[in-house]
Amino acid sequence: MAGSWVTRWRVRAGYPLSILYIALAAPTITFIAIGAAVAAIGLIVRGAAAGHLRKLETLTTSGPYAWTRNPLYLGSSLLAAGFAIAGGSPWSALVIAAYFLIFYPAVMKKEEVELHQRYGTAFDEYAARVPLFWPRPPRRPGAAVAGNGEASFSWKQYQRNREYQAAIGVLGALLLVCLRMIVRHRTGW
Image (spheres, rainbow, N blue to C red):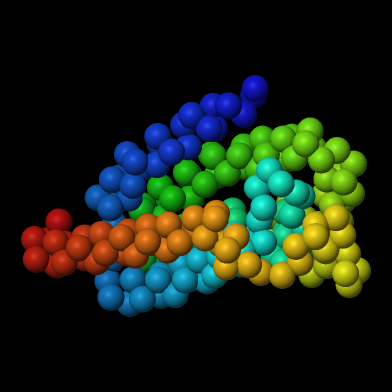
């Protein structure tokens, strides 16, 4: 499959790029605070999506999925923007932007193909109504829940999708950015 390189390299590339990001970062308390606030919005978007998503069970069209076909990636982009800000350096922000621009359009395209194969015309109708990435309010009230069966947020789904791991990861990463700030302050590097 054409998009299989994405699956293989998306996570693998993330580790060395994370190290490069930290090395290039010049965080300050202000940058970290603003970045953490933006990242928190990303966690909220991802969490809301995870509470609706029933992977491989049904085509999810409710909640954030009524506004964008990729609310998890929208949330991830907000997380990335938060870390781009927290890093306090245009170079560290460039590392994050390059990673997203290389991998996420390909990931979304690959998933679009898979969803079309799995759900056929139901997905095509959904895709015609809801934008790929940038959110837009639903055009018709109630249209978002058609074909889904699960229209309200579920903490059980949130937990089943293990979205809490994103929150743990963000906290850990913010601690690393704070540590980078301390090291830079004390050593000048």
